[in-house]
Image (cartoon, rainbow, N blue to C red; front, side, top):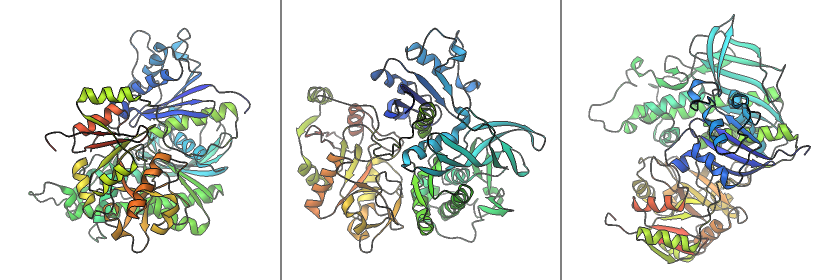
Length: 602
C-alpha cells in the first residue's frame, strides 16, 4: 500500500440506508439504519452516523452515496449554514473539521453519480477474484439528466450495467441500460467521465422507454398485492404458479436487444412500474369476494412468468458481460442480486461454460456504502491486496455483561436461566421455537446464526407454524443452516463448494425433502447456509449438537424479527420482540444463558 487512508465512513442515503466505517482498508462495522431506527427500509442514516463515535472521534474522509447528488434539494439543508444534512451532522459531531468552507469541504466526497459502480465495487472487492466483470441489475440507480440532439432533455435512470473490474481501482463501464420516461432511439455510443478514473473512456448505452428487469419484477410484486420493495414475497409466491397461455409475454426481442413489453408493464421512473392489467381481461379479473389476491391464479401465474422470464433476461446480460470483457469471473449485485432462485438458475448454465459466479450478499442499496468505502480506499491507497468476504457479521460491537443482562431481565420481569446447546436442542425437538442472539449482527437481509430464529426442520407443519408466529404470509418459505461437511449429501450445489451467505435456493438430493419438510419449498428447493466451525463457532456447535441428537445436520433458520420489522440489533430489541409475540425462548450462547418469556397471550 502506497498511502494510509485512515478512517473512511461511507454513507448510503436512500432506502436501505446505512453506514460502512473503514480503517486502512478493513471494515470496522457496517449497518443499515433500519436496525437502529426500527423502521423497515429506513432512509437518512443519522442514527448510524452516531455509531461512528464509538470507534473514532475524527474521520479522514466522509463518502456520501445515493442516486442523486448532495446538491439536490431532496437532500435537505442545515438552517443558516446551508450545508447538506450529512456534512452538517458530521461537522456538529466533530467528525470533520468544523472551520473549513462547509460547501466545499475537502473531507467530504459525493459519489452519488456512480450508484451502479458502487454496487460493482462492493461485489468485486469482496469476491476474491483478481479480475472480473460486474453485472448490476437495479430498479433505478443514478438519476442522470441528459441533453442531446438525438433525445433532447430528459432524465435517465440506471437499470442494468456491465463493468470491467481489476485492481487496484480499475472499474470501467462497458455497457449500460438506462430507462427513460420518454420514447428514445435505441443504442448509441456515449462518453462518461467521473471522479474515480474513467475520463475519456467510451461505452455503449441503451436508452429505453421500457421497464428494466428489476422494474418488471417490482410491477408484478405490486400486482400480487405487496409493496414494490418486497420482491422477496413474489419470489416465494412464484412456484405456486404455472405456465399459462393467457399470461402475455413480459419481454420481446427488439433488434439486438430484448426489452420488456410496454403493453404489459408500464414504467413510472424513478418509481416502481405497474402491470397494465386494464388491457388484459384475464389479468384484470378479481372476484369481489377475494380478500387475498395472492391466492388467485392470475397473480400466481404472472409471478411464475415474471420469475422465469426475468432470470432468463439477466442471464443474457451476464453472457454479454463475459463476451464484452473477456472475463470468466462474474460478480452480481443490485437489488435483483437478492433473487436466490435466479442465482441458482444461473449456475446451471455458467458452470458448463467454465464461468465463475460471486453474488454479493449485500446487493441492496446498503451495499453501496460498503462499495463507496472500498472504491475510495483502493483509489486513494493504490493497494492491490485482496480482501475476500469471510463473514457478514459486521455490525457494531454489542457486548453485555451478565450484570447488564440480569438488570434487563429483572426490569422486564422475565426469567434468565442457565442453558447449553443440549438444552436448546431438547427444546427444539419438542417443537419449541428458539431465538438466538450473539456477537455482531449480520449485514444484509439474511440471518446467519447471530440474529436467528431456530426450529426443528423435521416437523411437517413447521413452515405454517413458524409463519403464524412471525405473522408472515402462508406461502413464504424458510431457510436452513447445515454443517458444511454434510452439504453435498443433502443438496445439489451445482458445482459450488459452499453457500455461506444464503444466496441460493438449491435443489435437494433424492430422498431428502421428506426428512426436513418444514424448510423445503413447494418447488423442492431450500435456501441454505453452509456453516464451518471457523466461520461461526457457537452456531456450528449448536447445529452439531442437533445432529448428534437427531442425525439431521441442518436446522431451520429464519431472521429474528416479525413481519414488517427489521432484524433485531440490540438485546433490548430481542427481548421486546419476545414480549410482543408468541416467541418464548432467547438463547445467549456466549453467556450460557437463556431468557424465558411467558405472557398471558401464550
